[in-house]
Amino acid sequence: MSESTVRRWRDELIGLLAVQAPRLDRALKKIARQGGEVVLIDRTLIPTQRRTGKADRRNYSGKHRTQGLHFLALTDERGRLVWISAARPGRTHDNTAARHDHVLVHLRAAGLGALADLGFCGLDNDVRDPVIVTGFHASRTHKLTAGEKDANRVLAIGRAPVEHGFAHLKNWRILAKLRIDPARATQLLRALLVLTNLEINR
Image (tube, one colour):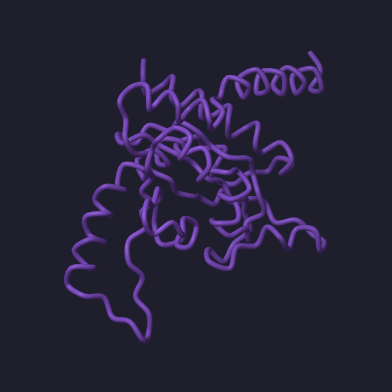
């Protein structure tokens, strides 16, 4: 059997699994139907092989100081991954990715709230009826009060399960450093999301 045949079968299998991954709107509506009230949103950087040329500079993340692809993900309150975004360059800001996927619009349509870290500050500017809760941010001119520190602590505890969701996903050895074409990374991550949930729920 030729190597090209095996590669073609592998790519077809990844494609078949990837289409089973839920869309954002459907995943949120399913959680709402099941009585859920909030989801957990976070982002992760999947390291990639460094490539030559200017085109790869977009994949450099200054925060992580490495090359990689940026993904957003949502989990339910228990930390089970329910959705993962398309791959974006590593330098993409969290809010930019969330706006591109219309996360806020879909959350409001489903009647759900979301817990997020400080990287998503400014995404939801609705003071009267916020959907995304991010906690309080300290600066040079603004020190956190005791109440704000307590609120951040409670939020961190509530967000802890999202890290478990990412940990389950990153158990796949192929994600230690992606060596595939970045254009195919989205399909791969969504296929692994489906397999991860099958593994956890069996």
